[in-house]
Image 1 (tube, rainbow, N blue to C red):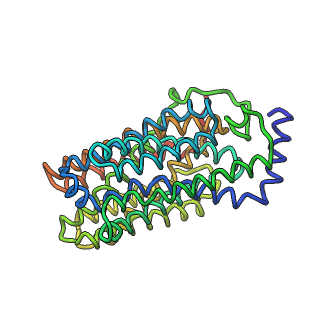
Image 2: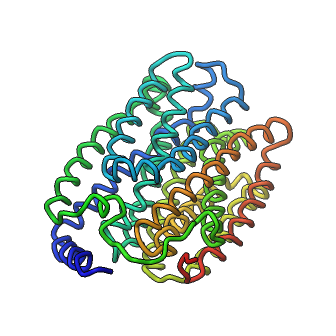
Image 3: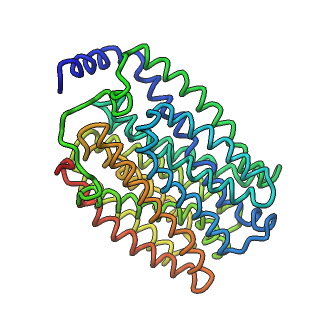
Length: 409
């Protein structure tokens, strides 16, 4: 590290204490936008189907499209960062998210699909840019802040899942999926403030702004040829596969066992709240410790218990939904923390984030569509068996990615 960068980092760390909590809160506010527009769909799938005439398999495709587009958006994120910088990328993605959310919810006909595509692309960019921003702005506390970030994502998902049914019942499915525009406006205002606040802390060059304030001279690694980066990417993909499959279909799975739509919606919210609790718990227990293998193993076990319970004793659906939520939150927390703990600087974090979230969400996009097709042609039990196999593979990859080593040539 050169003396100028070292002095800049020292100055940044000294002055950051006064505004650190506020800047972390801005990350939370922005991250609250990344899940509600997605998780508000599953609990009201039947209303959307009634209003649009979509079949069950088409609803599965509708749930998969934004996840696939998230992968495309994340793949483009490193180029966007190099072109306009991290902060501008956040602003552009939030504006795009607001516009496409309005199109999906309030433009009839093709607007449903056009808006869905745009939502996925916008969230993909935000997914890709926020982890390296955290690595840049919180260089000595990135794992902790990444945990807070993942908890905020889960909290947004939980709230949206819980309120979608009552909002749709009182208004319409369009309002229930479009009301999240309010969060976008709040996120834009908060991010604009944070740009000004960070600018007052330290003035950094354009290259530093793009790569991050915590710069090292570690050799640049092609992450696409690195086995550890592939393990992180595969773990990200499989945990997202599980999450998006059950965000879309858990209410329908429970309704097939005689549970009402309202109760299934509450269970979906508790699934998300359990995920929030798990992200906070993993962050508190794991801390900044680099060895994450036992956490990855425990996460897989939790998923097995929840899936096996749902298969063997569906009458205890609430219990298994909460257990699965714990597994979901813990695995998501680990997937994001790997980006921080396995990289040496924000430049490398940006590369790993783009890789893991682009291919990861392509893998995840298969989940809702495959589960919908299996449910139609086979049964929901077949879906549970399939997802248990995915959880097993995820656990193995998590143990590999959780080793206390850094990505290197």
